Length: 166
Image 1: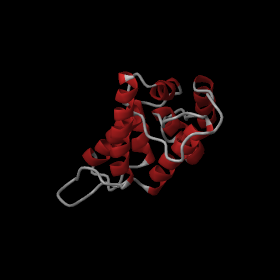
Image 2: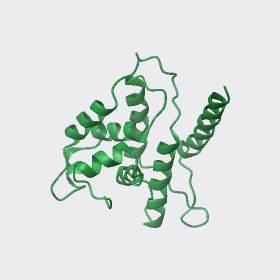
Image 3: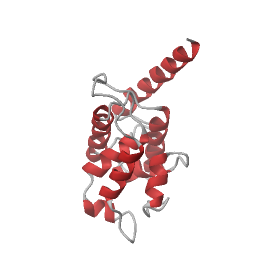
Image 4: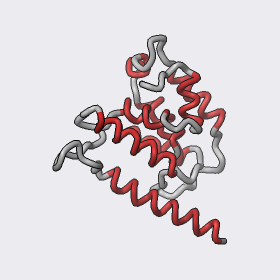
């Protein structure tokens, strides 16, 4: 029972962080300057929720963010990530094979992000800040996902030729 309560506390903390992130407020580049997510990054994060829900998963993980990017980013964008190009459909197929649907689509309307997904988003925002970007883009989201060496999504990206510095 205490494990369930602990997991609920983690989910509540992640939901709180998500609320802050989704309001597009983060640490400042300089006082009074916020780093928002780009429109494409916001669409990808919204689509990640839809991906998780469609698979019957109860939270949004980095793998759902990557699945969303395989649908929302253009082929040109994917090709720009690596000199040899990247096949988004192959990445999507591999992700779906490793993370199959677990139950019918009965998830709540607002899914929480996992701790790893929150970390990926924080990493993305931090990278945008350190590179003095005016907003956190989908490229930074990919980078944030790849920062977690244990993440299946990051491993799949590296397997398909996306360099760590994407």
